[in-house]
Amino acid sequence: MIKSFRTPFLLLVTFLLSANVTFSQCCSTGSPVGASVYVGVLSKNTLRVVGFYRYNYSDTYFEGSHRTAENSALKFATYNFSGIGLGYGITKRLTLEADFGYFFNKTQQFKLIDYKETGFGLSNGGVTIKYGAYLKPAQQLEITLGAGIRYPFSFNPQMVDNVQLNRDVQPSTNAFGASGLFFFNKGFPSITLRIFSLNRYDYNFEGKDGYKYGNILMNSVFCSKKIVKYFFGILQVRSEWKTNDQDNGSKVVNSGFWLCTLSPSLSYSIAGKWNVTALCDIPFYKSYNGKQMTPKYSFALSLSRDFNLSRKTKAVIKEK
Image (cartoon, rainbow, N blue to C red; front, side, top):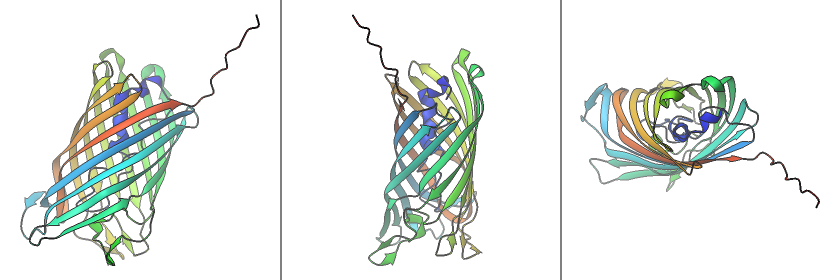
């Protein structure tokens, strides 16, 4: 990996972009997993470890691009999610990544009745391989391509008291998925500015119950600026487009959307080793198929560090 790519603000992408499991209509928008994309490729024998947490709150229904409260069933929906991501530089151009996460809760609070439905448990895991197709360290320029799979820890929907939970609070798709990504980065060291983008397409396969979650296209553009040493500010604009779900071949009307989000964030590197990032997601455009609960805000925290696992040259002890 190019040395400048180790700057802490790039670790923001660790929990923002990857492995978007926006598989349910109301509770999971906002890229809750986001641990399998560590920006560009890592340097050879470098291990990256990331821990992250995300909270999401939703309380507004949309029909198309308009807000609606007519015949709305839910008062609010929320989730708390945490995960771990690992990345390893196999060569200077190849990086292997893996992630998994856990929903502490995915909750829907109903409006007209005193009832709350909650799911919890492991989400889908992911494995991604990335190739640095074009690396120019002197120009701080990188183009990276990647492909990956997502897998469920269980193929069966979650049950509580022998009753299957609503799909919107299920912690997993219970099915496999595949993804492809394109990453571009350009740095301007003279003004400590960096512009980079990540584009990802996720395809969800049909589960054994005949349900197929919609496919997701995500495009993000970032602008990062150094504030002081070890301290960076980042502004991200993200577009997420999801196709309709299908139930045994039939289109699910109240599914699929186009969501645009503004994400300001701050990143700080502790002694140049541990990287801490905090961000908030603010949706500014929503267009939903049918009528769906939509996200109001989300915030996330990340802690990460790189470890050089290369064998160190042993010191030569001279004889006296």
